[in-house]
Image (tube, rainbow, N blue to C red; front, side):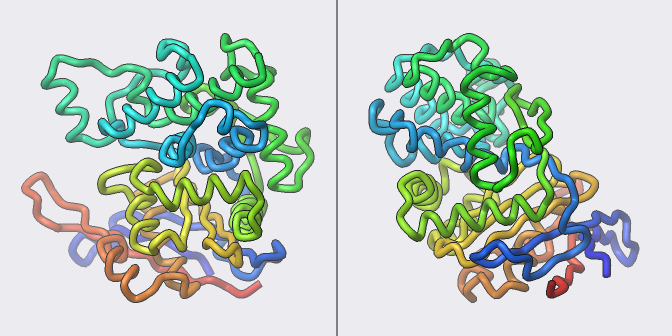
Length: 331
């Protein structure tokens, strides 16, 4: 059975977004699926929690005194709000790295209000406004910690990117040479994985955190303890972790990707929208969490707007709605 997010405008189905989902248990066994659970998927920014693990494991976090909110920013696709920018600058300052060392390209803040504020004040898009600047600051801190060159830290073959590849390999159980790579939107390596492997990686992250493994425990605690820093105002990653009181960790990736786990590590899940729509991914993720009974009644109420997501017209009228028609098939 196919699973979809549909956009209805009046009585007409205007658009269809096909959804693929893999759900695993604590042991990594496939327990439920929708669509193709083995679909090859570029992890994109959903890799960030794993890319932050070397900061803890290699000792950079302790050496530079990087705190929880700052570690959350290393895992973030942030809005570019003032608190995000301040945190990224603290990471750079703590590790003794200049802001112009950031290799991510400049873009306006993702939050429209923050972009308007910047332009109204006569500012312009800088690298630090890039939603990935926290990840890049963390990678620069890792390079500084190891004495690796800062120049080219984002490029294929640099020790930082090789360290990222090894961490993804460790958490997925796949050999590094079996993981296809490409260049992400911010310039670093991104990783191609079967959706099932993504679900297993997130499940293992939650399980390792629950068992107290230092890297996963600190990364998961940072993200769930500082959800604003992971995304920001109005964003589902932030709202979900707030609504669930830190019981659910979720991380978005570009082109309709989500990975999630619950704090005790009993479930790992991965989701991909075939046509890359983020709006569909958000609606689908909330429905999957409901189907798995992972949302309390209170959390579900807090996330109600994503159950039937309004798409307003230019007058602000709610004239179309996104709805998930998604069933999970037991494996």
